Image 1 (tube, rainbow, N blue to C red):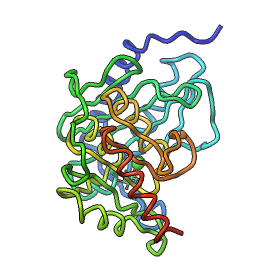
Image 2 (tube, rainbow, N blue to C red; image 1 turned 120 degrees about the vertical axis):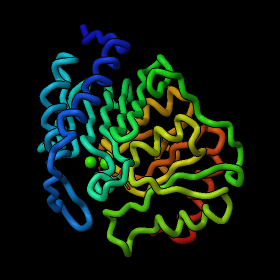
Image 3 (tube, rainbow, N blue to C red; image 1 turned 180 degrees about the vertical axis):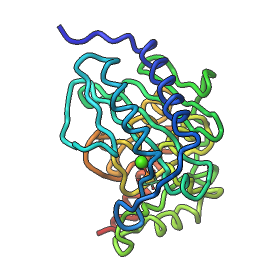
Image 4 (tube, rainbow, N blue to C red; image 1 turned 90 degrees about the vertical axis):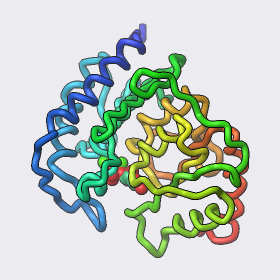
Length: 267
Ligand code: IPD
Ligand code: CA
Ligand code: CA
């Protein structure tokens, strides 16, 4: 028989762990190191990684943790934790209050539960399959903006992509010619949650990895939104790819826009 999981109580436990993880590093020195071009990791990321990687598996028997700062990308189990200890590390380093601890639970490739915590604001987003989505325990829902021309767009600039191959700013510019305005938060995990609570109608980014959206995806789905790859296919929880997260009403319009853009300019 497979593992039986009480998603309600499990989600309460991962909310506690997300907040506890952030508390552990409150006064920690950043200790910034370079991971690659324009890509950094701090002691804060590493401490949170160590804490969550040691605590999460005991919540679900047989589960494994895939973390951005972990050592093994290949670990796979029926129940998989997908963790970004800090999403938005560059913001953390520069003192911008837009970063988050993100925890997602995926079962056989489908998102089951998630918690995304932004320590500076104390905002804690959470959801589990079938249970609705919440911000600090209050129900949240996507907005009802029905046209790109009538919505605020969130987008990321994909800083780790080689700049010559990075067309995010161009696509953002294209969308900017129509939408009310756009915002770049520097945290994809928060972007997805912000769409979930109506702070924008559309979020897109050219190249992210599962830990950037695993926590947020179930929160958005439970808030009534839609999240797919750029070609409309379902989100995989491996590899890297473009994602489109919307209030649902704007998904088709944005998919068309991305398709047209890629036909003309994409490689
Ligand atoms: C990054 C942030 C950023 C996004 C990048 C991500 P990190 O995560 O979410 O907003 O544009 O694609 O990799 O490196 O801060 O965990
Ligand atoms: Ca990230
Ligand atoms: Ca990270």
